Image 1 (cartoon, rainbow, N blue to C red):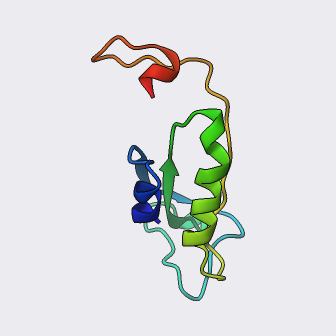
Image 2: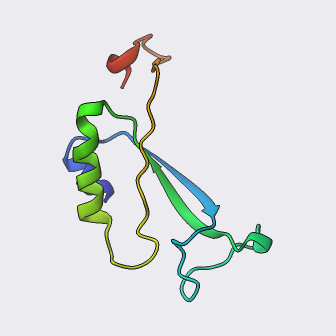
Image 3: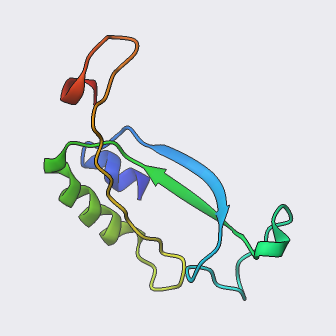
Length: 98
């Protein structure tokens, strides 16, 4: 999926290795967390992409086309508004900072 997003011009993303609970886990395949065994937490990767509104649909389509396996755990996409962006190094603000 990363390579497909990169080919579409979306090179800047953050991967967060985390653990969570939910219907996305496959109990026969996934490893239950040693850190949170009481919650039956499973390892997941959270992908974060900051993008302008006009790019959101293309990003979602790319993720759906390249991230779908048909098994539990394929993931989900949530979209959150960002009020403002500041790039510290260059002092750019707003869309220029993305």
